[in-house]
Length: 422
Ligand SMILES: NC(=O)c1ccc[n+]([C@@H]2O[C@H](COP(=O)([O-])OP(=O)(O)OC[C@H]3O[C@@H](n4cnc5c(N)ncnc54)[C@H](O)[C@@H]3O)[C@@H](O)[C@H]2O)c1
Image (cartoon, rainbow, N blue to C red; front, top):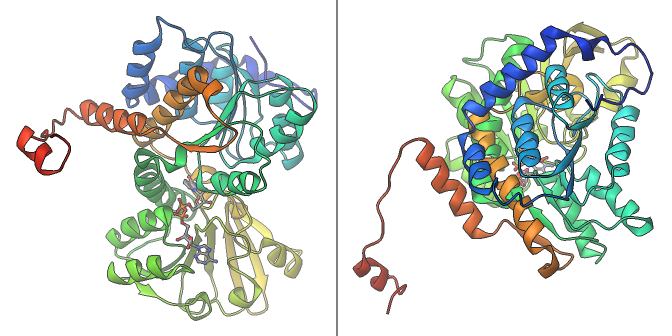
């Protein structure tokens, strides 16, 4: 068994816990049940073992759905190691299950930020051929390493923020290997970012605060795929919704969806709950917090914990209190402000993350993209690639199949009409 690295060399009791072993196995089986697409892909490829001889380094939230992807990679022949994409998103029983199944786990529940960085280095020290990241952090580190000792054959990226980071590296012609951005597949962001994050954000919010949502005024910063998903679900709960945006097209779309759209400056005094999902830095700042009402909740769902100016909060109230798990109370002048999940991804830290059903789509794209890289890396340049259209379509077909949904096909006449046949 590859035991998770333990930086403090302290007791590894949790690794020999029968209960955790059963819990991890159950969680894996439970997720697999809703991720039959992954099973189908494995069945189709298992005979050829396309990943034999390849090492895959994963940097993903360590959830039951990730365990299904990691185990699938191993079944197709890869040697897999994993660290967490966020210091607070390591589910203990899953780390345990993976470590018991020939996956090198470099992660600890509640790891510190230093440990989180150290674990990424540990994954790179395994000399992976392919890097699969969520947020672009491991890709950035891999770029330092690639210059020195090791050549990577390719990578994949799970999320919007990681894509933006890679775009910066590519624009300086510094990309050292081809990267397929899974986030940009239609069968990823239309479903995972929108419906997946929408549902799991509300789940996280309710688990942490237990607030009564009908009638609450929720301010959502960012009306991209994630913002659209969260607002749609909260609308169903009877919340009043205000959207803040910097992109006029998305702002107009939010307006036509029936939402109030204004500057954050104007929204600050009226909101009860504020949720950032922009992928940007410093969205909710001192000047906004100063205008907020007593008792507001601040939460972030964007990938990094940089959207809310938490530095201002900690500085302004050094005596802040953890009043409950994942709620930090700041006393600012005459009012209290509650920061949820320390400003880190609310749906993963406070909730259980996306449901397996929607993660099946994202991870089917990941798995097929990794297999694609293993076969085609020699033909690819050091550039950012979209998921090949045939993979995107295959994932949609598999998903419809898993729901037992059949759809119509274009007739010959229709194909001719559309110019697809002569
Ligand atoms: N927590 C999760 O499970 C999860 C899942 C998917 C994506 N994400 C992350 O959520 C973030 C958003 O992802 P997305 O797919 O919606 O991206 P997106 O690019 O579709 O949307 C982001 C939106 O934010 C807007 N925006 C940018 N700066 C802003 C500002 N200062 N104020 C208001 N709006 C602003 C942009 O105009 C855009 O419309 C990213 O960080 C992404 O990595 C998190």
